[in-house]
Length: 122
Image (cartoon, rainbow, N blue to C red; front, side, top):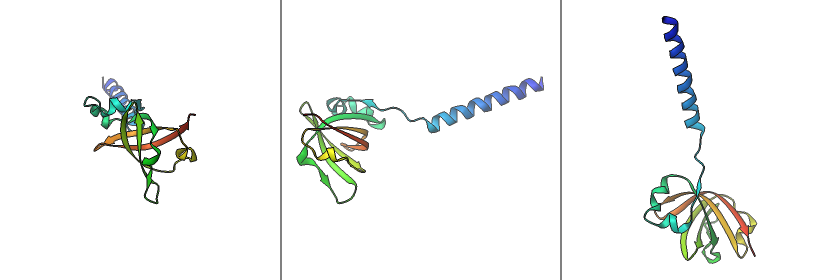
């Protein structure tokens, strides 16, 4: 009888450790969302989860404080979204017609991007 309790305790501890390890290392994959859906009242609930957004970079909106902090605006289907990104930007970021994929969360009306990718379509 005591052996059964020891085996059960061992299994529960092992299972609990596995769940703990998974939850501390697993990062949810971002969902691709349109700017329109993200800015809508229904989309505001997604702000706590990381999401990915694609939009056309508004060239006149790029602003850099002289460090690795960037502010810019993305546009898609007439809707615009301000973005704040900290990090290096590729050279294609400065080309005309650049489409930008950002991943992050909405914070106080501004998209806080943790990653950025740029592609230029002609």
